[in-house]
Length: 603
Image 1 (tube, rainbow, N blue to C red):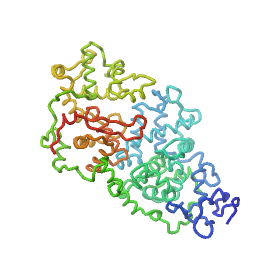
Image 2: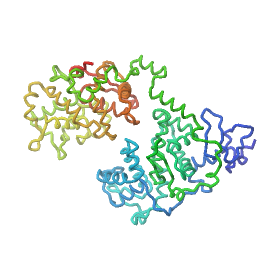
Image 3: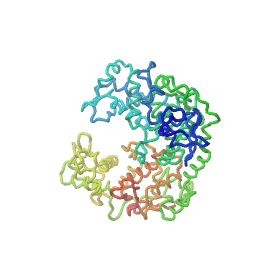
């Protein structure tokens, strides 16, 4: 057994106490020969470092730019670089000085120009076919590239516009990025948060911490084409704790694999044009390294040529078992805890259409307003009912009757004074205080419910502009005078359900099927909404009926937010509550009397 201060027998050159002392290996001695995959005796699967010793692996993870004896990062490359980073840089250089409203944002026309160029990259055009969230990924690539350009002083914010920084001005103006490229690479991996973080871990996502190991993977395997999933599986053979952390953020181990592909392959390797991606493979995208990788980063040949013996990515963990576990997790009904949720009333039992026949479901989702045997909507509402959109209409009518000028502004919006009047009427006291404690709303968009209500009123033809003033359309004046705002509720509901885009301004892809299937969601709310239930109750029901619709990490959120938190709340069909100071708590939904008065389901 070597002493604590003796050279480590693994061959790393470091002292034993700083290398393998805390990583005992199996067998009689802790002195593993270089190239022998170390075997750890702990609760995780046996790590496999592709022939690296623990000390070498640690240098990749924690001392990547400080291990110059082993890892050489070029100051300049000879090949003209490509990739998303260079595409964003090339576009912005053509436009500087680029005036913007504030730092960190770009004008819409500039975003469109960058996205158009990104779509022409082979990596990005392939992603468009591979992932429904490609547009969001493209925006992420663009914004992380912008952060890197600013952090690297290639671009500088002068308070009004982006201008070229002095450090790389000559090369940038000449369009020669061969020296800027390595500088941006180091800035990107050291200073830019380029992955989804793991909140519980202070050091951030394991993919960022061990980015150097991912590049070693690519250098070792990239000469031949390998599936993207193989890179992910091998990474989690080496960093099993990383897989556990990432799977907790998603929906099981397969989510960890998807995260690796999205963040490392698309977000880092493709960002710097290090890889070619073949999307024609049957089992997912296949990866091959480009020659510029070896120009940018050189690992010791001894590291890259070590014999791995019988190691295979399919040996580090039982992926068939993991797939079975994920399938069980997705079904969600193999654990006693799930059935406890059923008994508590926070989840539905495992049914498909929640009692609907296929014919009834077809009519409900494809022709809800023309299926009287399945669902009917009241032609008019009796009694007194409240809804945010009706509150806005009531206040608009009062202001018009009083001769007040409430707009439109130059952008067609309500005036600032009317916006400030409406804000406390449309928000809880806590939300209003949280948003406007320091500064009152200055424009209609600051109060989103007011903004959407105006759009609905105009789309329904109830409110229109005449001689630079808002007026009530002649067609609806008598109805509103006799019955009040509830007299036009059926027209507003149909416009909100069929014409208005629920995905408007929430920053996520459209997913139109969420809106098209609103009838099923409202039926679920009608059946179970008498009792307050968490948002997951309704997203689970929707996912079991339409399992291919919510196939993204954000899909469940998009469904409950758009259907209940946005549409149904605005129309007064549901109340949404949450503990005031716990923003991580789920939204709680409960149906209102208006839902039962307006919609009757017959199946």
